[in-house]
Length: 326
View 1 (cartoon, one colour):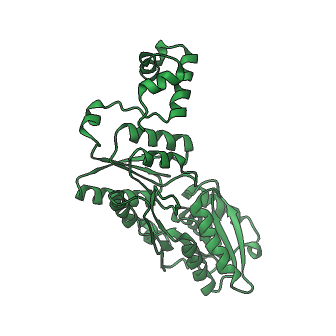
View 2 (cartoon, one colour):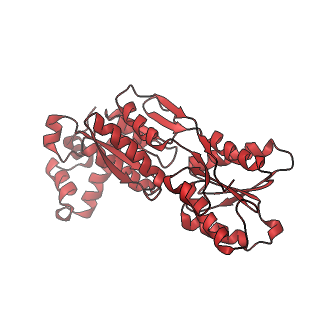
View 3 (cartoon, one colour):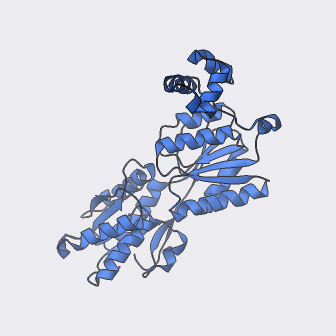
């Protein structure tokens, strides 16, 4: 059932005009009244529509796309695939960055609902999906990218990251590496957890192999470079001989630190495998071996799923792309 301004007013014990002022001109309303109105909105799940014309005309011709980190070229590729497919069916894509901030993610969801988006595609921050589920209950199609969901009301498109993690470490093991480090974080990211789990399983199947986990606060070049510099401060005998980086940005940072030192040869002393196979993985100082995700295909498929019955789950297989680092 659609929640109206009158419903919010009744819950807050104020007039509909006061609700309007609290939303549009809060400076005209007592702070405690504004808080009551906001509490009523949260309780009832009310979503503003500040575009009455769009309401009369139905949904807009736009799709909202929320990514975890716009700095990562992987998400740029996802957006490129979504935009190309959307254009083919007469839609446009509005790209936003949650920046791994749960509050910002919720505000973006509400914003796209207010704007009467034809659908929302998102890489969710956590497995807590109630905000997306409520959006779907309002009739807005939702597709989650890079997520393996179990909600009947939400469709998903993903890659088997456990298999990808296993493939990465098996490549290192095939090269003779036995002291392997997984470099990535934060741990609350599902992708990081699954890639580590795949790595752990690969090592557990190989006698004499060891897996060390080096946690990071973020999956960036700078954090990868800092991890590489930390490894260089160790005695040579205590360093790993193989590294699986949770994404290519981390791998690039590691590669920079190790090669610029002049004291570590890649891959002879330390082999490296990244993840995502972003465009410039092949152009690093030593071309990077990586596990490829079909990023553009993920975006295009997400757009296609918006037009289908909810609850469809599509999973792609990763592919190892061997180059010079492993």
